[in-house]
Length: 240
Image 1: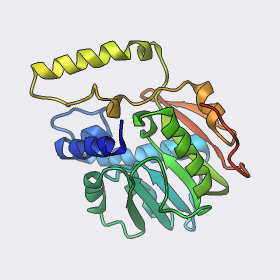
Image 2: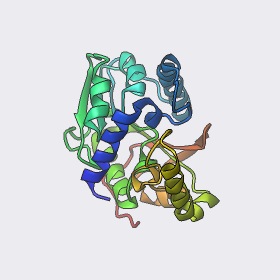
Image 3: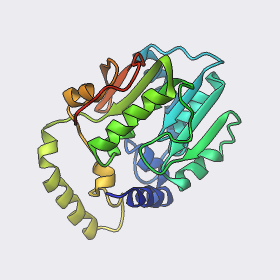
């Protein structure tokens, strides 16, 4: 999967139904938009409690995969600066409409934080993003970049979907989903594509990739929250 294809996919989803592709737990049609935006604060509170993060008005936060800014709206009042990045220009246009004065929105070309200086962040966060990555190599690159951008002893946190028995059936499930989309003209589209299906690495694989110790907390909705403090003096050699 090329970065261009990935960007094109998420721009199409932003035009199709941006709230659903950010949070597929709600209905595809007739989404309660107020509930959607409120859920950002609920999730932010859940993350803070799970990782033991206490925001300070002097803190800088990097949010990877901010989408339409659901979490960004909850984070920004509690810190001095947020760098919120996403691969989709069209998702970012919606996020920018919130007019959050202390947020810099960044459109990225792929698995990097190239526009963000090293050692600037007190928290680097990626929520419900990495399960859509195209490969373990992309995850490895992001983990390296998170370490680079984080201050010494800063918090780093990200979620992934668990690796279950369904992973072995993914080829069949993708084929079934593609066939069903041909038979109906309503509902979400292209969920069989790699850009949506993404990766399901094992916990052991993720822990081995990290340059710093990680804890794993299970959240509701089949989400695994990996989190720890950046104690890495340099990015160690890792093998995928």
